[in-house]
Each structure stands twice: as structure tokens, then as C-alpha cells.
Image (cartoon, rainbow, N blue to C red; front, side, top):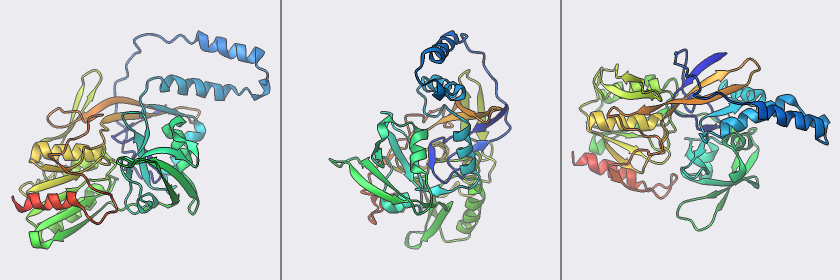
Length: 389
């Protein structure tokens, strides 16, 4: 049985799956724990025997399907959206996705605190973004199918699809009295890592970091070198709509602002075992006054980096409360090609604060009318804060 560790965001990528939403830490060991009580499976056997004996449509009985259904039910009883079981077909679809099947709408979905399927972030340049989906939108229906009865897996399956095909969503948006319909044409999803520009009249480097994929650290390093040779004296790091990704990439980026050896994040297991992830960078941007933009689409690695910069670099957080995803999952692949993900620990900020379910509160709370609205009061507030520094 092959085991992998997943860092941060296991919110379902719809659907580019380029490690930014998955974040693998491969090959690390962890301690397994013996269950506190053994599981009595005799009732399962009794039910199966009863079905085999009395069910009218015996020809429809598929032992493997019943087995997988029983396992899914057991895992679902934990009421943890990030702990789930995939049967061989579901696992195959997932593997194909992370190996390059990048067709879909281009948005992250997760469960809010009411267990409603919610848009975490429409990803930059994708059909979801262009169609006007916003972070925090609650999906009511997908192609007239009620989303309230779907699992995240099922919602993901309905939102995936071939380039050029359409999917119709009914979403509830904060501040609107009625649900709205949004039609999206699926496409091949190609996501940029980051953009930057110099706001020259204020000597501010404005960096938009869209995700933490496996090239994020290098891409940021290239930009950092340009900033150091530019006229920039201050920095705005925009993590709005950033769904997270690979923890090591967040640590690498944090190393440009945080002294070498200082903690960027902590991982703590249920047994209290702790592991520190420390800066290995040069902290060459440490003395630049810094504002970090966050919103409800800032999740996982984005929250970890924003929180670390606030704690260790005195960065000012501007915007809205972040998503609140701070747990760690491992992946276990079984011999029949099924797989299990299970939450084993949580991420903490350098000061020991947990972001899971809580998110990060901005120092300066300010809303934004819409992601596609050219009026950006959050960015303007960030500029105003830095002008005064």
C-alpha cells in the first residue's frame, strides 16, 4: 500500500488539478495509530447475507459496489469533507486529472460551515472567472440537480467536462435576495502563477500570486530579483482568490521576507507531535513595508503565508476573512486501485494559532463589490496604508 502526504488544500479543483489544489509532500513517514476500539463488522455481514437471500433483484447485487458503498458510509460518518474514500473509477479519474486533464470551469469548491458546496475561488483566466463566479457563492444546483444532496466528489464530477460543453449553475450570492443563474462554457484550464507591476508614482511593487504550484517558489524568486533592482520601496502581495497548494512553495516565498531559521508554519498531529517548517531564504525583502490582501477565496497555503508574514514580518492584512483550511491529509492507495484520504494533522501559524475553520481576520476589513469590478477598494486601501508608511 503506497502512502503519500497531502499538504493543505484538498478542496476540489474544478478542474485543473496542477498540484496547487493538492499539494503533495511525498515519501515522508508518519506514525500510525491503533484504533481505540475494534470495529464489529458482523452487522455488515448480516445485512449482506440478507440482501443476497431476499433482495428481489439479486442480479443487480455487485459485491464490490456494496463493499465500496459501506466504506464510503463509514468514512462519511466522520463528517470531515477532507477525509474521503475513492473507488477505483473515481481514483482513476482523479489520477487522470492531476496528470494533465485540465478541462472544466476552473474554480475551487469546498464546504462552508453549514456544509454547503461553496465556490472557494474562481481561478485566474478561467471560464468560472470570466462568467462572474465569486468566492463565497453557494451552489444551489448544477444543471438542475440539487447540490445540497451532493458530496464534493459528486459536485466535482458534474462540474467537470469537455472543452466547449456548457454547465448551468444556480448560486446564492451574499447580499442578493434571490439565487442567480450562471452558464459556463468549459475549457482547457491554464493558470498563471503570478503577475507583478510597479505602481511607480508610489514606488510600490504589486504582486498577484494566484497559486502555490510546484514552480511558484522559482517564479517568485525571479520577480523578487526584479523588484530588488527596481525603484520599488514597498510591496503589496495579493493573495485574494488564491486557493493554496504546496506548502514548501509557501515556505520558499516566505523566505524572502522572514529570517533564515525562523518558523513559517508548524504541523501538529492529534498526538501533539510537532514539526516546524522554517525559512531557508535570504529575507532580502524583509525591510520592505508590506501589505497582504486576503479574502474568502484565500485558503490553505495562502492563509499560512499571510499569517506568517503578519506574525513574523509585521505585515498588514487588508480585505476580508480568509477561508479557514488548515488540516493535513495523507493519501493511501490500495491494491485494487481504490484510495483513501485521511486528515492526520493541522497547520499552525508561527505563534501557534490555528486557521482551520477560523480563517484569518484582516487588520483592516473592507469588502469589494465584485471580483470583476474595476473599482477595487481593497487594493486602494492597501496603497493608502503603504503611502503613510
